[in-house]
Image (cartoon, rainbow, N blue to C red; front, side, top):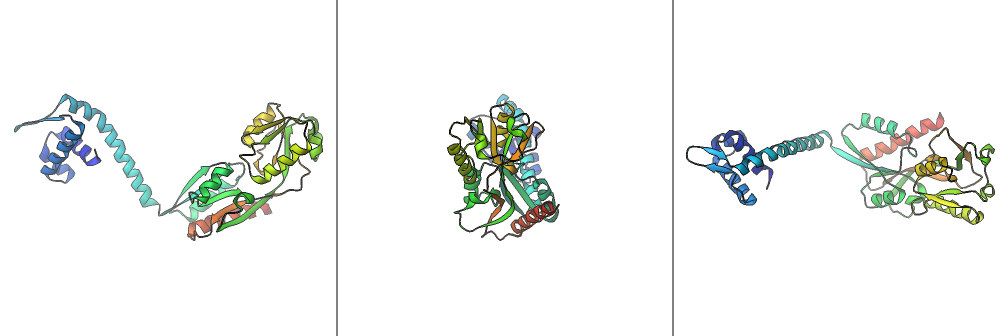
Amino acid sequence: MHIKQLECFVHLAETLSFSRTAELLYITQPTVTHQINTLEDELRLKLFIRTKRKVELTPAGVSFYNDIKEILTRTNIAIAKARHCYLSFESNISIGYEGNVEVKYLPNILSTFKEKFTHVHIYLKMADFKEKRNLFTNHNFDLIFTVKESIEGLSDVGYAELFTAKFVCVLPKDHLLACKTIIKIDDLQNQSLILLDPLKCPSEMARVQKDIQIKCPTSTVYFGDGPLISYTMIKGKLGIAVMPNFVCPQDPELSIIPMDISDLISYGIAWHKGNERNEIKGFVAITKQIYKIHKVE
């Protein structure tokens, strides 16, 4: 069954005339007859009663018409929309990122990019660092926002650092450690700790978390799937969390205090070096410029 068959059926059901249907569809009358015959054969149903004097719908034909007309209308709308996208956009880029907290200037980047590259369609997808790396490696993403260590080992990949991040401790405002200006790993002894799932976080984070667990063997440890879940757990008084400062949304109920950890995390944008399209270069340049402006401010 295909669209041309359905178009012939709907027009014939409405006109009850093979000649008129042929005129409306700009095809020959024998073609209309062929389309209807093949449709009836596929459905194993008689849709029309045809005599020399008139054409009528069978009960099955009436039922099929009532259901298929709406489907055909929606199908034609979908085709029209797809054609509009095809005609409106000459190119497309796909971008992977982990969340709006990490890439807080993304709305500004997107609006600036669209002003300069109106012909480019943008596809955005949120993914954790492992899924993002896999999709990027398989060229399902043209660009990704990522920590630098997550792309090490990949060949022919360009990377531009946007900022470096430090580790912080996130805890309720009424917690005993909330009065400190800096927190050491030793201060975490015997505390309930909320860490990111080591299977779902970058290697830098997993390395720091492992060091904390070794130095705080008596601490209770909870694992969260991501920063937002960790925030819920902190506010639920399950524990306190250690995480990079760039994944921490501001929350009036919580305090964010620097950790006495020397490790820094490089965060930036990565692309395939072999992709020389102007829109890729343009997106990277716009991203770097916007982060440079905000860094100066």
